[in-house]
Amino acid sequence: MTDVPGLNQAKGRQYQQRTTNRDMARRNYLSLDTAILLGILLIAIVFRFHKITLPLVDGFSWREISTAMMADNFQQRSWNIFFPEVSWTGPGPSYQGREFQIVSYLTALLYQLFGWHDWFGRVVAAFFGLVTVFSLHRLTALCWGKMHAHAAALAYALMPAAIMIDSSFLPDPAMLALVTLGVWLFVKYWVGGSGWLLPLATASFTLGALSKPPGLAAGAVIFYLMVCWILKKKRKQATRVFLWGLFSLAIIGAYFSWAIYLGRSYPPFHIAGSGGYIWDYGVWSYVKDRFYFKSVWNTSVLWFYGYPFMVLFAIGLWMPLSRAEDPKQRFLSAIPYVWLAAAVILYLAAAGEITSNVWNLHIFHVPAAMFCGHGALLLAKLSSKTVLTPAVVLRSICIVIVAVGWSTLPLVRTMKKPIAMNGKLLGEELARLAQPGDLVVAIAPEVGDPVAVYYSRARGWVFPPGGGDSEWSKFVADDATAIAQLEELRAQGADLFGVTKNATDKQDLLFVEHHDGVIDYLDKTATKLVDSNDLLVYRITRP
Image 1 (tube, rainbow, N blue to C red):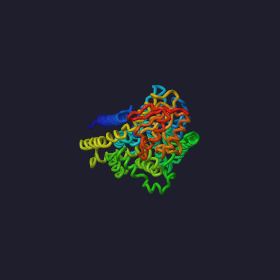
Image 2: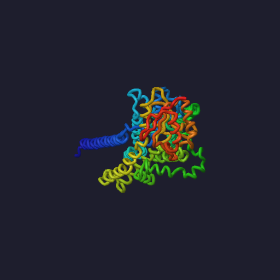
Image 3: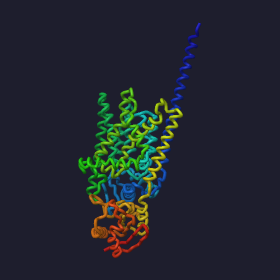
């Protein structure tokens, strides 16, 4: 006769063993997943912290220097974060309408704790870049699964543009990190997470948009998911999101209203990013210039991405994932497309501004990395059903080698070339010659770049003096006008005048040739202190 109790016990032990094996496999998988993410973060650290102590003399020098000056002035003059101030428009106050200064303020705190180092701002930016890598990974895992999360995070970690911006003293790394973190927290809340995720997501997203207005484009994802809730008759949840969104927009609107007021109330009456939009130039002008697509193409090929990443992006965008069976997952899988579409609309409205200040393209890099990761997986897998076969692994390694060798290494090296080094040398020479309280006038290799003023560790002016509607990247037409400008600065207290001998404006006019009459005037009215192969410095005699 069959021993039924014994049979049941044996079946129970077999079931328990299978359950234990599944649990062990799940833990091992989670451990592997965590290890891969940590490895990707390590790769991101290596590329973002390589040459982190580089002076602020690379291709983004101009914008980095203004951010660095604001950090200086927080630490040296006032800790009021609502009054960002630069040092290149005279003795001041030189408050300007700027973004909410998260990166510069954190850097000022580092100055206060550890002393001044020009590369501290790069460190702060790089840490925000790591937050973006992590948040992008977690967001992609919710949208497209863990393998796509690994691929997207690795693509972002290796993307030349992301590396360059994340290691530059700019507000953009904070913007992208905080809005990506906010969107991920919101998506986590949307799929059934705890209620406290909504205020956290709102706070993070709001700070990101305050750091740089392009971050608002990522809000399209939140709006899209709110509409999805409305379609699913979840009006209570949608209403809660709508109210938190209004609160966020009210804070953002209030701050930037203040920034505009500040920029219009103090000389030189400068508001950052206040030109180059479709409503400034007109729709016909944008159409005539083909929305600056040639400019953004050249930036993409020669600087930001290179052909390997552009090919991966095109493949990933052109060949979507297979349609998910779960309706909720179908909503989530559309998030990269929603983010990309919002970023494209932003570009179409602000192409003039974005192509003039290319770091504004950073808002594209989350969806771009997601599509690049998808494209890489498609190429690696081809017809394979799994990603663990030797052929798939080998193809994946080849894709990474091609991307790093053809795009990442050469393009990052190009963007980090110290093109403004002579401006730094001029600033250091002015610092050596300046007396306490001296004001300097300086012309860097790229006219309008305040790098020499910054490294002089003094306040002063770029030349021609800029701000507001003034054009500071072009020399005036004649010597008489330039001399009149110089005399006005002398009357305001200018003590030292310095110029690099390779200083060239955007019309390709060389200062020492175009304004040789100004140099003759200085020879007669000022004291020449330095005349080297690279620099020319005078002490201006007060009237």
